[in-house]
Image (cartoon, rainbow, N blue to C red; front, side, top):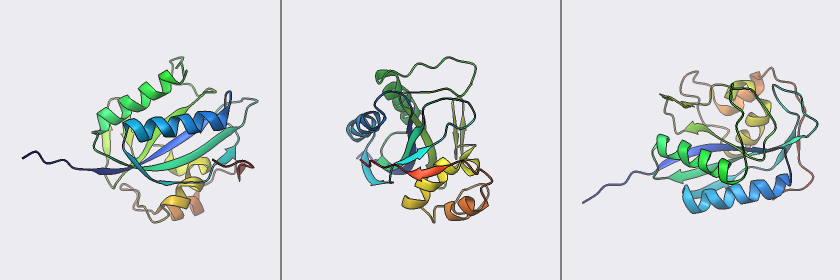
Amino acid sequence: MKLSLCSEVIAGLGSNLGERHAALQRALALLREEAGEITALSSVWETEPWGFDADEQFLNMVAVIRTFHSPVQLIQLFRSIEGRMGRRRSGGGRYESRVIDLDILLWEERVISIPGLEVPHPKIADRRFVLKPLSEVAPAAVHPVTGLTVAEMLQLCADNSDVRLAARQL
């Protein structure tokens, strides 16, 4: 008998190029088909670019996914979806505009450190555009390193960038 274990993962989605709402919808459809069951979605938030200058505002949201994939499989799937949707990484680790960005923010209360993946996301506590939607779906989720809840991280976040509900939701 084969035993399958399901994990709850919280993913961040963002887009600031092209038809941003359509990009989020397509990414969610691909995640449903290939990653697992989406059990919760945040609202869509409109935000300034973070860490770089760009004319285009971002749409950001988070999704709670129940998955049978391993961390390596899931991050590879995320990169595959990004590529199929037209994202091209320039290399060098710079922030840049993108059709779609998929990040693993939290994986239950696990700490994962492997090449190409750090969970919890290393900048989770520094980014209001992540914490606002995350606080909608998982305010009591605990950061496994700091012991702070998402709600507490949001209160302590020094990022004062403009994060507002998007006029158009999905």
